[in-house]
Image (cartoon, rainbow, N blue to C red; front, top):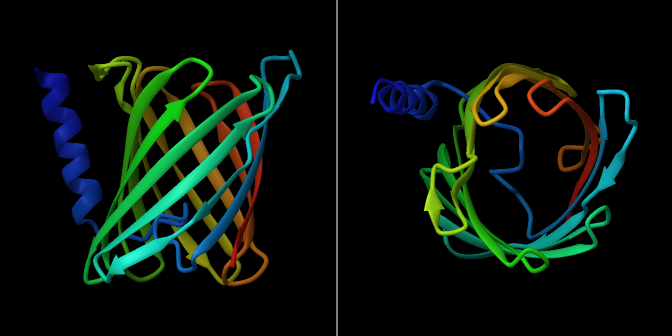
Length: 199
């Protein structure tokens, strides 16, 4: 019970702080392409790639729907998704990602949130909030804080629940809409290089 209360308090903080997330939750364009390459830092040297493309439909200013198609090369798995993004006054955002892995026939739900103000940022992502017909099973809650300066964005934080550990991201903006991101995650012993293009 104490753990649940602590998690709710952290989520409340993340949703009310003066912050801005740069993970694409505030996707400014209709078309998105994201290409992440990940490698393990435990010495095995395994490389994984799971690119995805998405197209945003915005029926109203406060909501957008983005059908996404992802392919995991390592697992040879096709993963269709639907991202539902709701916002209040284009400042407060919640993103719900409904994900279905066709290979494992597993459905999962991930929730992210942010507040878009100034150059400081705090955001949360709750991976596998719902998975395989169960809530809070092998789920991972990540909370990050950081700062953006010109073309460089840095944030760091911690993941709790499953595979806890320190997480940090450095994003280099190539243009206002496209970037390269470096990510290090001690919880899953991985280093990720990603490219994102928005059109």
